[in-house]
Length: 113
Length: 113
Image (tube, each protein chain N blue to C red):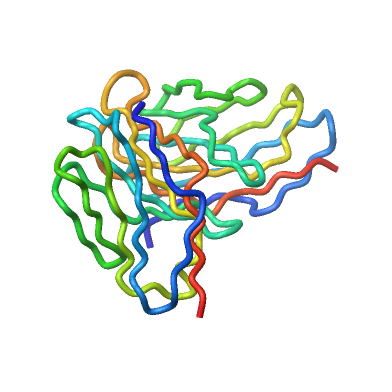
């Protein structure tokens, strides 16, 4: 499995962009990067995923570097409801562990007024 | 609305008792997963099933059992052999062997009386 590294915590002012980094230097060519978030006492919520091109949906944008060794999740206009733990995950793309999600400690994002 | 339903939301068990957690999905997904989350920790995979009538152990399967008799349902039994069952249990599903993300239910919180 490609190991991911995220900062333990980040702060962001309401209305500003939140940029959450993730390093995944051991990622292989056919492994995707997924982002989830979890608000206290709720199930993880899928945000976005990508392989090598930048992706955007109604929730966020995902920027993946050209060498694919790191990525950044961007919440363009953070709100107080975006306060959560954000997980960057690279599941295996083959073998018996296909698709297995390994959740690390993630980044605690705090959005303040 | 399509989604994953876990029940009950809260569950209490006496020591020595088996207890079954329900997970139902109407997303027509082939794969289903059970995770456990302890306070302040990431998720750990208990069991997963890629197709009906087949399932595989995850990283922490001891003291747990599952069945997959129907595509929509993947119940988890926490047996008396599980020595530390108090945790937040999360069920997820996804299309089989694809890059589509796993989607999670809202979880069941199990406590020992």
